[in-house]
Length: 288
Length: 288
Image (cartoon, rainbow over the protein chains, first blue to last red):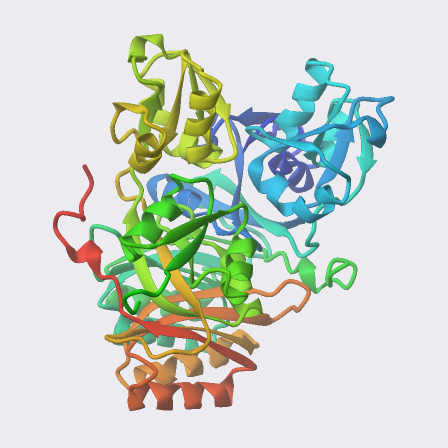
């Protein structure tokens, strides 16, 4: 972002959401962060240039790919210009002065509650109360002055609302990562891009998928991700999500995509961007 | 199931859950259905033979694959012996005598609330209250005699609790299917099996994935699904989920798997079972 220019970032969730943490990692000095109620609104704000950038989760290591956001990528004219892998760390958060022994109820999004089920059970017999989202449950126990309750959410949510972390890292499984994408309007060249994401469709999968893969294999292009998704209502037609090594500026990749166009019914290039290979970092890898 | 033998089926969720509908489609005359709080418990009950069968969702057309259940399939010694594609139809359900004009609050699981967001907004300004699950929210408004509230859940949940459906098919998108798997302990031959599911790992994806695919392509074996999943903490090692046409009894498939064993670091055969190709049925396909 050139100095002096405003940097406005839209993300889904309440302030303190994991998507806000991802947005702040992308832009530590963002001039404005816009929380949006839905993913749809994140895309709309970036499309209408009410935000310079949108940040969305695209897959989680426990829950899988977020097809809804792939669908939105197909419907909008936004480009992926970056990615970030974020380790999801859930903490037990309460109002200042509240101790663990006072907690009778735990509030959070059902997915976070599920991811902390075993560790929560060890805290004793507590009432589990589902809410709309993790950060929103911190806001709730603060605003409603709930002193016998705690929320499960991010450390950012604890800090933003001035709350206390009673127990760090409540999640049962440490290998919980979400990959976020950074989106912007229009086509643009991204410096150091070395990874490209595409979506294409083919009919009658058997030989066709193998031939589609050959356009990469025959050119020694590494694949980072491949996922098929059946198109309901269109029997035998499949969408494929593929991430591969290299950028659209590389001649080899350009040729592979030209070759793929001969085979695919539909092909959309989502963008080329620098790969986040941070889980090769020993600090980040391994279970705890 | 031989006549006279008990048929006990475990599924995750409250009575009236979509998993119960799937269980009843598999076994219209099941002698007992056991609702379980978690997926884990479904596997445990089938493993310990407290249930003859377990029923789990494995992928949804909007939300994607349920990695957690793939993980549980890897950890347990259960075999997939059947599959079923269920169209997810969400209804607006209230206590008998309550009319739409009296409804001020809507209770359901966040995912169901999200899938009905646009249609719910058309009903007027209503308070949206997240709950643990869809069928559980019907139970809640019944037991707590909530007369200004409605729940979003299945028609089975409405029937089981003796409630009224105020509005059918509240979901915004009709192409919402969940694929369920039927699990049983031990290896067994399933009559009419024509689809097989496997999980395998390979290192260093590029050429290796292409070679893995070739064991099927070179034998003209159709693929129904392929999905890569990065193994966090093990950079460059991937798990692949593959569903292919044919059964373990076919010599061609046996040879393909023997060939795949030469290439894969790890290979687990999850089972061969009859494919549910019901979305080729014109009644079931297409948007509404």
